[in-house]
Amino acid sequence: MVLATLLENTGAWSYGYDLAKITGVKSGTLYPLLIRLEERGLLETEWQPPAALGRPPRHTYRLTPAGIEAAKSNPVGAAKTTRPSLRAVRT
Amino acid sequence: MSLWNSRSIADRLLRCLVGLAPERMRDWAEAVRAEAATIDDDREALHFAAETGAGLALTFLWARLVDALALQHDGAEPRLAAAFAATVAVSIGVAHLYVAGAPFSMIVVNIASLVIGLAMLAGVTRWHLLFRDIHDPSMVIMASLLVLTSMFGIASHGAARWVAVGSLMVQPSLILLPALLMIYARNTTQAGVAAIITAAAAMALQSDRAMAGAMFAVMAVLWIWHRNRQVAVALAASGTSFLITLARTDSLPPARFTEGILISSWQSHPLIGIAVAVGAATLLLPCAVSWGSRNIALERGAAFGAIWLAIILAAICGNHPAPLVGYGGSAIIGYLLSACMLPPKQLLHRKLPTHPKPVQARPTNLARLSPRRTSCA
Image 1 (cartoon, rainbow over the protein chains, first blue to last red):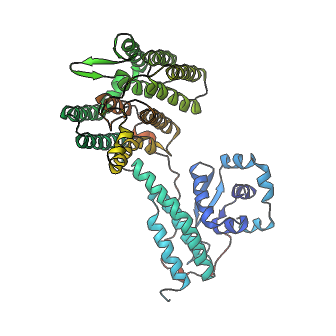
Image 2: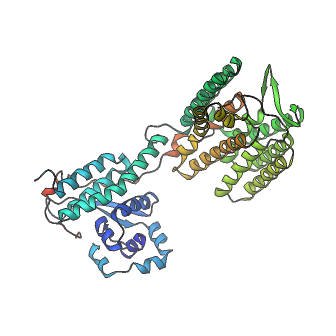
């Protein structure tokens, strides 16, 4: 589900909190999952600078080419996660 | 700000999480903290912090355990784990021998074997370069020695497994076969296959179920990674050898203080039984240390684990030596010799992804943050 959501957002960076809300996956499950994806080279991460002063930098995520391949190999899962609200996290 | 409002509790929780995170995962803990700071609603922020903290705390604890076992960041390695495991197991074994009233010479032999084995392991880094290019001849020589033992070795009740060295009875298969299997695990060459077939024939001739079972277990493990002709042939040869040993009658009576230890120790006292069982289980520590590392290190660690697990199981199920926790220098030297072929520390190091550093210092007080933002431009 998370992989499929990230696939839908290919090229753009996503936030953890928003991913949890969109996918409905609990954040306590989501973050360990993101760590595993990163360890397997399927996910890349980046600290993005704050948009305004006083705001914290945010950790963002997107699929690597290998991650995109892995997500595409499960098109059924990808189709299930198509949601309009996904646009909210696109950058 | 109140000390105990939802926001401050969330902040404290996440500070704890950052402290709990191992260095290589520190960014993830900071990421959750930054993410919580973007949440407007204090209760929602606390809920997010608690839920994420619970999930990540387990991940961080597990990572710390793996790091502690693998000692990945301190430059240690599975060989060190093997040295530690051997020392623990032999110490427990010696204590058991002493309590059980074994002759003092048995205790001396076990301790002397441990010292010899540890000295070999300590020197392995220097030897490695010297022997790197002679793996194939090494395997062939070891296999030949096993065949010679089955033909000219000392026999007892139809089993020809021993060679006399002075007043000691040495079991070459316990010394040489684990090392041969570990060398094969890193060099599945044609010569290696020939050596495995020869060794499999020797185990069938010696009628040694434990070692034939260990061979088969290793080949089955290797088959997971290498589904090629060489491993298939070696798997078939070792499987056949194991079946032959199972089919042959094993009338060898148990040798006191050497075989049946894993069962008889429980009869002495449950605590002794537990100690001996823990000692035997400790032998698998190098396998656990290799767990989670790169494929090549994992493969060798798994092969090492398969060898010693099979030997331990054989010692539980039949009249076979209980490695290291029972009397017998062959198993002690064999264990540490095979540990010489465990992966060096370089193979355990993962290449960790690096993250660009944040452009601004992270806030120290989440309560000061302004309203949340859901996306970034």
